Length: 148
Image (cartoon, rainbow, N blue to C red; front, side, top):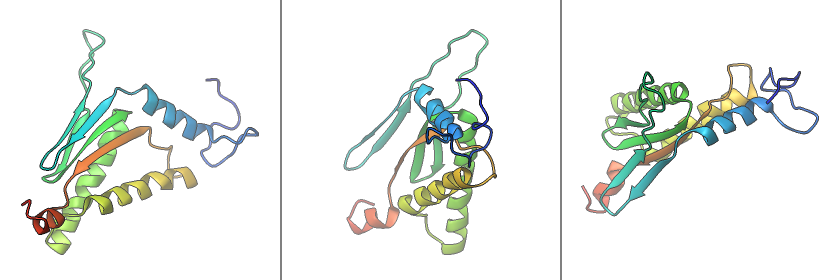
């Protein structure tokens, strides 16, 4: 893609109706390695393709543990994924400290979505070029159903 006057700022629309920075972030996710999530009634499994294209290149993690009840698999820019994983861990620990219980998966995903959305509406920074596949269990819901 070539650069033009509309791709330096995330809040400026091009004449074609595009936000180029958003397009670049989505392209980074498309070019990332595949990840897969499987669930059963008792388990969830996350996996990602481990590619090492060059001898000197080092493998980058694609699956992250967020909390005892939650994990993510990523596709796209690994640096952005580490930033969001750190944010998710911090939010999870803060919730556990304040409320004495694990944060629900839906609440944490909503917090991450809010954080990612901020980048598309202001000059804070460029949009995150990462897709997250989230797997987790809500501890209270599992206990109420007799699963734990």
